[in-house]
Length: 385
Image 1 (cartoon, rainbow, N blue to C red):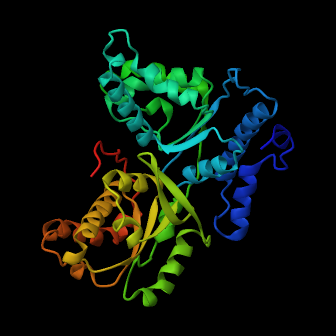
Image 2 (spheres, rainbow, N blue to C red):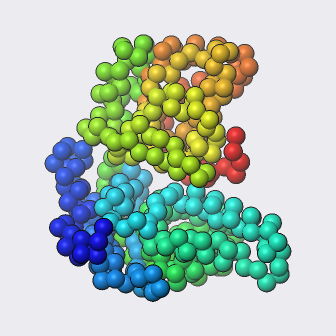
Image 3 (cartoon, rainbow, N blue to C red):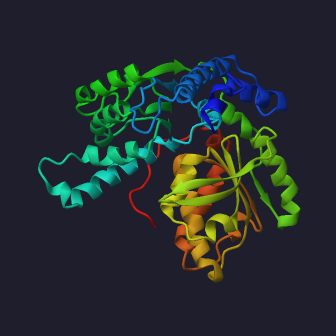
């Protein structure tokens, strides 16, 4: 997109406009608190696009840092949805949207790799420089972090120096969280060492509270049968209707999820939900890290055409077990169609023991209690299966 196109973009409030379009199509119910939050995203959108249109991001010129946005609110209030509308509307290539825990996982991996390198064995070496320099060299200008939450000392002790360098390099932070900045890492070990980061965060990002009273995520599944049983032809109409309920009537579009430097294709995604066939996830070379990425990317997942798994499908059965574990640990809502009943799914003695836990979890995941709960703060694992 040319500089002139940035300057003459016809929509001055793209987040609000797209939000209202979703309301008009019936995908969303208009919420005054969400509309108010949309105005803050539009302010940031204008600041960023105006800076770019005036040529402040020249190749040799350090960009002026623009204060970002920290959107806080209870679960299911639409924080991630609003951030995604902002991200999609931002006509800037130098942007990234990632779950907070995944981002910090990458930071830790970078530090570990640096310390193992010859340069990292120098007593004066700064691992944070080694981690942030590639990020800044890539030209990143906007970092969107979903579900910002600090619960362990390793992240707490890194954040201030990490974001000191990112902010100094011109990176704007956009974050969603269930926790006010002043409550981050509450009662954590050596919390006084974390307080400078809280001050830095509040100085570098506007804190906006989303005061919606409705848990919209919970409404999607209220009173719904989330599992269907039968042949693919029999259950497809049922699953299609449930998909449209979950997405508010939006058909969805294909997409991709980045995982370990590669892309996982998503056949359909919309409004925080992803739709896959069993073969898309369980008959492809995917592992635990991939399934955790998926569980962090979606709050709801639809899985079509789960077959009975005998000895000929041992590998697929193992992946299915890992997938359900990842979704369950995260609290993702699952809608699925099965060719046979749950108790008849596992017919392979190689996975019989593990499958007992999987069936137990599948039963729990269709309960009203499970469907009423919010997402859990499950951090990514350190190893790949």
